[in-house]
Image (cartoon, rainbow, N blue to C red):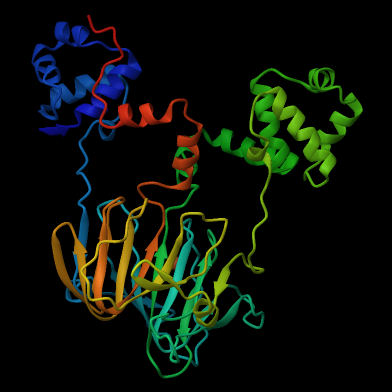
Length: 439
Ligand SMILES: [Fe+2]
């Protein structure tokens, strides 16, 4: 038996233009279940019937569990997730997982065990960009490249042992596929919190992994030949049947100038951007899609914020004091801040658009959510769904991090593009309405 999601089935019936009447004639039992417009248990035969007729995969129909409002894990529970990692012939890290729903990214805590007198061996990096925070109590070395004499490849990630200790330590963001590894600076042990976030490229990677091998080869060839600005613009023009002579005619720019524009690999001058915007107007498309943006980062692509600079950002936020972590315009959804809690009043003054992780870094406090208040202590962690009011009271500190899971900047961009967005958002949620030709 398979538990199927009626909302997903309805979506695919609409998309494939298959009516309940059609199903009634071929599979009466299934028809009766579908008519109730409720999630239901399907036999293997019924499932296969749907998969065949809707031309989809099992995962397109199977019901996924709804998200809880929040998940709390005590330090004790987190400690049970401990798993050692051997690397370079030594016990290199212990990993511990923070709570998250199934299929969601979750931060990990790492015990840094590589001793100070050994250069830590690099890993291979990963698709997900990450934010890393030194949790202390020691300083650590970070390594990001082969030549450790270069500052961008090897430097200290410090722990705050001075004032405002709730600003726990240095933080940095590492880009996609940057190798990284850590070692101790002296005999003081240390831990980091590392959050490998959802990659903005994940959808593209998942899809393009299914392309024929030749398609991907030609895609890379195209980008290498034309550069990514022009290559993508050209594909859009091609798919609309537009060549340079037509652009010249319509934009009143000389053909010579248009040809010169398409020979460029980079759009650097204002003149180029002016031509780009005229071409984009011709095909009704936003020119920003084709422009490669510039971001602040060091020579290996990371952004760094020392705890000293983080302290400079201390500010009052609702009933708390907070300070910033390293952030980059490149990752609009990956960020965090340090929180100091000092108010007794059991308050629920926090509310975020994306799901959020908390790690309690000191003290004993109350986590206030719904009508409940739960005691939380150093080392405990929480995952919370978006748009759930909550708050903290008592004395202590936390780290808050999020990566846009549930609602990210790409979703917001799309919502802003929708015609009649308020009605669309209301109708789209658990939509069981058929497209209108059922009888
Ligand atoms: Fe990592």
